[in-house]
Image (cartoon, rainbow, N blue to C red):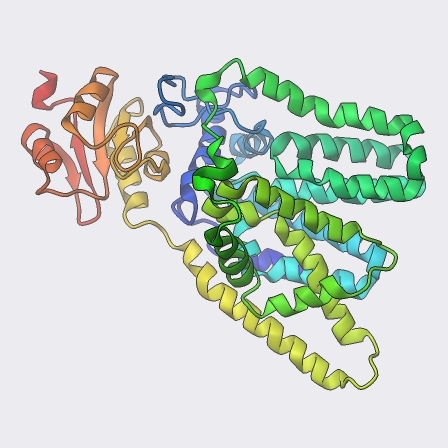
Length: 476
């Protein structure tokens, strides 16, 4: 029932155009998969649609985008090759991984707390609005949560049974998760705790642990060595650590713990159940779950600027939050407490959960909204221009509009290396640009007047305008 509920919630607006919350990042991920279909699959050289340099001074005309190994993107491309290119299939891949995460979460919690707490934890993972949205986005995060939860589950099973199948699965899930993002690497802290709890200091004599270390870290080391050969394809990332010295400032605590954790994830009221789960004295699990949470708080602190800037950096917190929510809820509903009314405890539970979901959804519902005109402008460009046209999108450095045109090109405007200027148009024309499209056009600006005076309009509506740069006066 929990899986069916989770599935039904995640099907909401599954087929909308890629122009929703954080579409700027989803667009690059989706472009990987689509370009694998257009240009052929090359796992080691994934390409986006945008030719704007990722690092100042390093041209990126090949459109390389080298971050995590494109495992998720390759899976999506495989689906595309069978069912056709449609963004709903990419979202469906994320959705399936999210359902798998629910299963692993349930099994981990059941191992320590029993079925009731496990079902409650799985239920929270299924219904938290913030998690529902981010369980069907075109990002690798849903897959990475699945991998990290699988890593923990098979680690527990291996330490309990010492069987080769569970050990091999532990190694596979570890190597895949460590290769994808930074946050799984921080989870070595709770893994070490489990290992030390099992073996004590004799863990130093366990050859399987050394084999695991090599196998788990070799893929990420190899990938980093490979992409270092293509610096033009590596986005600038040092700012993620502590840009503007944000770490431990008031804004850091506000955005992470008030805005994201308190409001978006827990809807204010859910904080009570989370705190209850945190303060209940550990038993069979020891400090495993607390160290799991601590490791992710360290991650948030290390990548302070990234965590403040991007709310999807809080996705890794969802599983452990759900575990403590489930633990606290189970204690409130099913444990016997002298002097506490079980009826009133149940009423409090439903009130807390009800308000938590309502307040969270109040803000998260806006995540599904589409940027005005971006989808329509993209369709128009796709219909009106040749497939090999190179496009300039003038909205900003956000690649959402470029992705929706189904073309390659350049993002121009706000915070882009290519501002909306006459010089930009002329420079990019020399590189082959033949179309300019924007949903944010100012006819009375100097740049707007320049376009209107020099280039024919392919199509104009109240939401977008498209110029033909090939027939402009400056190309004669």
